[in-house]
Structures are given as structure tokens and as C-alpha cells.
Image 1 (cartoon, rainbow, N blue to C red):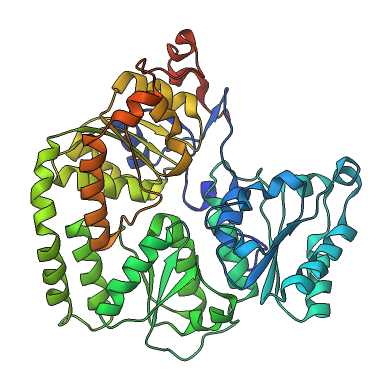
Image 2: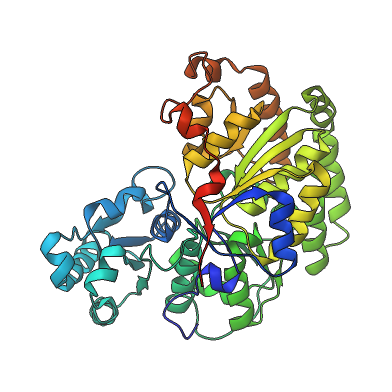
Length: 469
């Protein structure tokens, strides 16, 4: 916490954001401790730490955001969960200011945001242009903090330091805990911290409901949280990350600063994983007696759906999700006797060896891609694999539809806990049973017009290279 921002994931987790090859080859690199950073000699656009940070910070209800950069840098705040109910503005740096600086604009924007919304805090988010013109954000923030009397929180994203977009989650969490959370431990309460950085509101609400049935009050941080609730972070008896791969940094910081135990668990996707998740939390909070009845009640409720899932009959799936979610969905697919024929992960790190080994044991040696965006790589592989179903989240799945592959989109439905079991099982059956939309969008050809046949004939391996020393 002495640093002004979080370390990049490449250094903290040994994460890579580029790979094209086999699952067994990737696993061997991780097991040998030789996970190699790679570069793309051809790259398509993908989100950077800036977009990820803005999407997360925009869900904090009582804060405002000042994006210090050109107008386009704030584009990801439009729509979706982001935007803090519209409490954001952008300084609109022009060509001249990108060279000579725009600190005056920044100071004016902070005051304007305070006058317009009276927020509990203001995030000042840096952009790639600030990394070029070297504006003194720190001084502007300190001056505004003294003048306005509220936390003014600098968030140092620049799109350059890390090739792994999820670094934006860590940068946001670092800024929040450093500038908003208590500076020292506080007396323990009875609630727990439920750490979420990427999850939908459906999933957060589903898990909070399960914990309430267990008799636990869960304070969500940072996604969908409030600045006014920050003092309670230091009072929790336990921290649990919904996905330790994405929110682990928050748990580590809270454990280090306040000595709050951090429970590292896989995401609760599917009945066995949800039961293990609840069992672990119940054991850590002294609620072992209540847990069996809770699990049995929900398991019985979804048993008929699980039995009906046998009709899916080993349908081949392609999964494109962040690593923790992808591993969990792949395990659920194995339990339902579905075949995973390929995977794409946003990133992979040194700690993913056990999950990669389980994936290999359950589904064999799969082709694997690592990276955000990079649609060409994925379209190339999908054209070879021709899966019956594409499992992803949000706009990343559009090109699969253009290839005639039905898409099971996890963005707008609960996928975690027992509500997630119901949603996934019914959604899988419906999507596999009604492929007409994908066939219509593909116009019967099953090709993506964005790429020529000769381009799609290239191997993705040729442009994913090891970095030279």
C-alpha cells in the first residue's frame, strides 16, 4: 500500500495475456515455473486496464468519476452497469493539451462534479494521454481534497503498464482501500466482506441471499458498494472473494491491513461447488449446524433440472470467460456429461496449475487461447472446432453468431449458486434446442465476412511470439 498504485498482474501473479496452443503445453509451462510472456505481431483491439477500472468504479452508487483524458476515453461508461447513475464527466483533453498538459481543466472538472452531484467521493481516473503529457494528478487531487472536504481518489490507469486488462480491477481496489478505507483496524463485527469486481448484480444478489439464509450479513465490496460503507470493511470477521482470480487482491490487502482472514474459494458454479463454498464459509463462521439443511433444501429443489440435463448428450462447447469462471463452467459441463472442445481465457497465471490440470483430466488436451479481444484468433479456432454451443459473456460472442454457432450468454443471467444452476441448465437446453437465430445470422454459410478465407487459413501461432530478452 506504500505505492501509489497496484503492481501489474504480470509481476504479482506471473500472468500472461497472450497464448495460442495446447492445454497440455500451457500446463507444462506453469508447472515448470516457465510461463512465458508473449507478444502479438498482429493484434486487434481489446479492453485495457482503463476500461476495466471505469466499468467497476461506475457501479459505486454514491461516488462520481472524472475521467482525465480525451472524450473517447470515457466511452465505456455509457450503458451497462457502469456510469454511477450518470455521475461522471470527462475533461476532454484536446491535441494541444495532450502535449502541454491540462491540469487546470482537471481542477475545474473536480469542482464541477462536486457541485453537480455532491458525491461522497470523486474518482480521478488517469488515461493514456496523461501518461504522455505527465499531468500532475497527485497535486490536483490533494488540493481538491483540502478544498472540498471529501475523498478525491486518484486511479492510475494508463493502458500501457500491463497487457492484462484485469490489472484495472487491482488498480481500482488499491485506490479505494488506500484513500477511502480506515487507516487502521477496527473492532470486529458479525458481517463478512463479499468481494466482487466483475460479477453481475444477478450473481451478487443470489450469493447474498444464500449467505442470509446461513444467518450472515454480507457487505459487497467494491462492486455495487458505497463509499459510505467503507469503514465497515475493517470490521468484518471474514473476507470471501466470489472469484479469487479477479478479486483476490482485495482480500490480500484487507488481510494484510486489518488481519481479516481471507477465504480463497473457487466460484460456486454448480451444485457440488456451491455446497463446498457454503460449507467452507459456514465452518469459518461457526455455522456448521445450519449448513446441511440449507444445502439439502436447495439441492432437492433443483434435482429435477439436473436429471433432465442428461438430454444435452455430450454437446461440444467452446468456453470464453475469465479463467476462474471458465474453469468452474468446465467442471459443471463435465458433471453434465458435456464436452468442452476449446477454451479462451482472459489471462492465465502461475497459480492456475491445479485448475488447468483438472481441465485436462476432465476434457483432454484442448486447444487454448489466452487474451482479451483478438477476434481473429478465436474465429480461426471456432471455424476448425465447429462447436455446438459457444459459452461466453456479452459482446465478445457476436462473431460466434456470425459463424452460425448458438451462443449461451452468461452476462444477463445468474450463473452462481443454486439460482445459477437453474439458470444454466434451463438456458443450455433452450439454446441448444433453438439454434435458428445463429443459423439465420450466419445466412447459412457459417463464415465470418470480416475475414477472407486465406486469412482464416493462417495459424494463430505465427503471430503469438515469445518476448525476446
